[in-house]
Length: 293
Ligand code: SAM
Image (cartoon, rainbow, N blue to C red; front, side, top):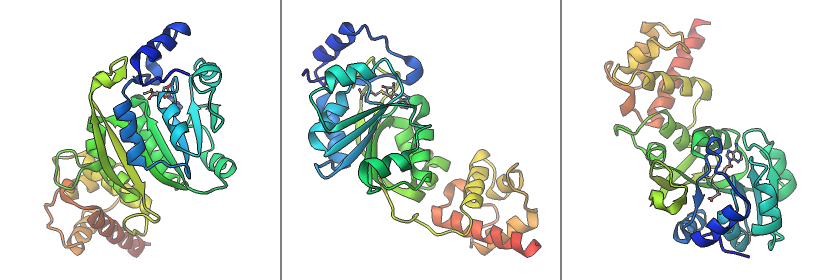
């Protein structure tokens, strides 16, 4: 069986099966063993682990996952790649299950129940960039039994996920990721590690999931609506952002009070608030709301 981290072997498989890269599926295959090892190390994969791989492609990362993990579940949307995985590139492994499906549509809770008795799994992937944020957010929001998610994403997206308050990359994505997990950028990956080369640089980010969210808040939905409102109009004050939100309907007085009770100045901008401060602000807004009822 040919090791696909060697570009010669990847080219051979591409030619043998006349593979045309499907742009609509974000197909950029890895051709660098060093990068693959970074993913395995960051995820801390051992024979004890069951790993879900999203988008195995022709099976490059999957080969290494099969060597290192106890079991691998690989979900690939492109049905043309499935016979190649089953009959050729992963044929030597008996610890892999290949599923031809869209990861956004599959019932992952049921899959983890049947494949791993409901015990926590790890997620590893070189994610398709057209759908990175929806995949990561749905994994986090579903509160699935997942220990960590270690994925290749666009460098800019990784920076936003890990950003701290007051920095240019800080925004709703940073807060959502950091509510559920502790992100850590494990590697920066240049375009020449892929075939074909993507238009942008990439990074490997590991999100270690918390057992419970990192802050407690009375109404999660209200907190995230408040966060979206504050970043929708970045140059406006937090007060104006919340008052102008189409999702929220608080009076100017209610918002002013909630901001003051959170110990913040009236002209504060949302981009400086920590997750804890957003949680407190949202609890104050919730109080204002119930005072009205
Ligand atoms: N893991 C391979 C590698 O590293 O060489 C391929 C990575 S490629 C960036 C992304 C893969 O995800 C492609 O094989 C693509 O067909 C697959 N994919 C795209 N959208 C998907 C979806 N919604 N569900 C499952 N797989 C998807």
